[in-house]
Length: 259
Image (cartoon, rainbow, N blue to C red; front, side):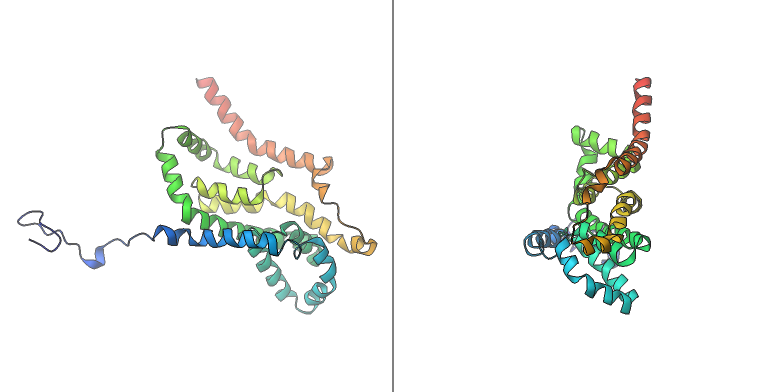
């Protein structure tokens, strides 16, 4: 009788300790980062709702400008770090943060700081969701022969187009566009690239609005955040959406002809 159990007279079932594959993390441990982010989102929705709004920016604009002028690199790092936290923990104030980037740093390089912070925060949320739920869910969907499996196969076949679409369409909430790819097994590099490039047009619009906040503050007014739905802005965005959807339409047309 061997210590690993009887499997035959001349067979040893033990495996050397240095050759054993590491055991997977406990399911609760894998879900901990996502649970922390979800908890922070719920707390932030109540605690920070009024502290990260436009009125807070108007109130503290002089202090922010003074910090930027005295310590520019520190201001850039602090701003990007704050943006990362807002997106990763789904805190309120992402739009105001984008306006702040334009107000403090101008349309350029402000738009780069905005998109960098948003992309890094989205990647953190994506990784937490994929580690906690996405890997197992994606595997189950891929193994399924029902509707879930067909949905997974359709997304896999058109990943680049689908990822760009959910970023470009203004109606898709940002946190949904961060979580959905993690739950269907999208590779990290595709998620990061499509996030950075896909949010760039909208970020450019709001950053440019933020760059003009000085005049808005002087009038005691509020910025027009509905500018993204104005025809001169919305039509080009819809054109980009159509361009992103074109490969999907072409593939569907080809399949229809083959069928």
